Image 1 (cartoon, helix red, strand yellow):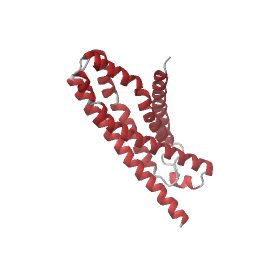
Image 2: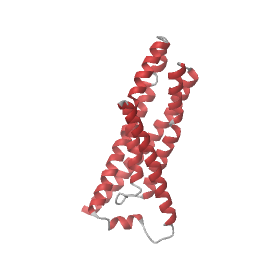
Image 3: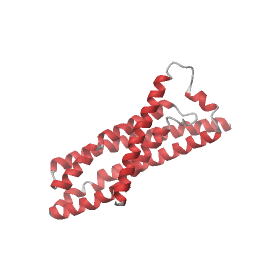
Image 4: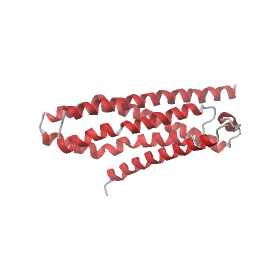
Length: 206
């Protein structure tokens, strides 16, 4: 069993866990609907270790999100445009490049699983003075990224099996472009959430 396969399965496991965690949080929110409980109010009496863990989760979410912002746009403008260049050297060269890239891909995409998992866990361990609506929006955008991922992944897989195709390449470019935009939206949301948290901390120190 190769390291790449293990990392890929870890990535898949994190995505599945994130979906289940988010679904569980959604069910909990639905069942608690109408009860007199404010997310921000409950955070005021949260134990200090729980607050610190929430801040750590937020830090991981922000860091992993911005890694994915950069990797999404690097793939869009630097890595994937190499495909037609490699194809000019013949099918064998293109296939060799594709095999080398896909064998290293699990290391590149693993932080995407970390990102989704961190945002999902923040639904259960709310960060103090951070709107839960913002966290839910982050989870929704992560879910959209997971939903769009089969399109670029499928295009890559088909080109690896059948060779370069302009149609598949175009699908890879536009679908990964959508994914990069989603990453960027999550990144901007993460900065807004950090601003919320820092603003609250500054008010508490004043």
